[in-house]
Length: 197
Image (cartoon, rainbow, N blue to C red; front, side, top):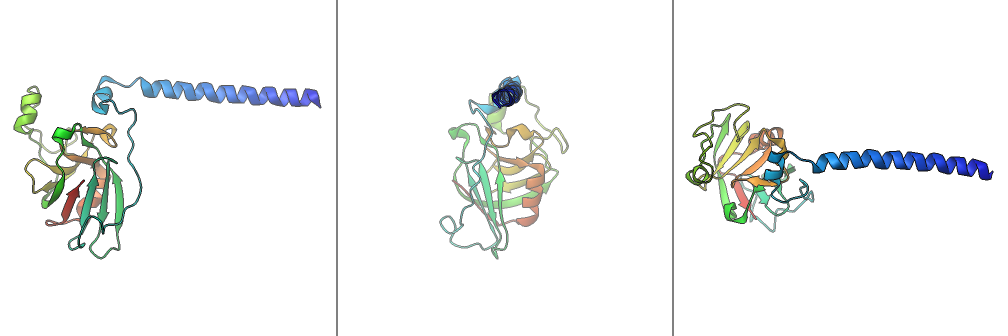
C-alpha cells in the first residue's frame, strides 16, 4: 500500500511540476511584451475591464433614445435601449492619461461606417511623425465604425489593434472591438445620450 501511495504521489508531483512549468512559460511570454504593447499599457500590468452590470437610473433621468454610459475607471461601456429590452456591456480602451479624458454628458451627433481619420492638432504636436490622413480600411485607427460625439475630436469607435481594449491606450476617444462597435452602431442613433464618468 505504501509503495502504491508513493507511486501515486510521485505521479501527482510530476503532473503538478509539469503543469507549473507550462504555466511559467506562458507567464514569461506574457511579461515579454513587444515595445508597442509596453507603450500602450502605460504601466497597466494587464488589460482588464470591470464586468459588473449597472442600473441606468443613477445616471440618466430617462432612456429616451437609448443611453450609453462609459465608465473610464472600469474601462467598460454600458448600453440601454429606450424600451429597456436591451442591455449590453462591452470592454473598452480609454484615454492614456487624465488630461486626455473628457467626462460629462454628451450625445451622438454623427454615425460613420468606414470612418476616415485625421489626427487632431494636439496629436500632431505630440507625434509629428504621424500621417495627416488615413482613409477607411485596416490601417485606420477608428476601426470599422465611429460614433461622433458633440465634443469636438471625441468619438466612440472601433479599433483594429485589439491589444488596446481593456487598457488606458487612447488619445481621448473610447475604443471598442470592431464587432462590438458595429453592434452598438446598429442600436444607437443620432441623439442617443452619452455619459462619461
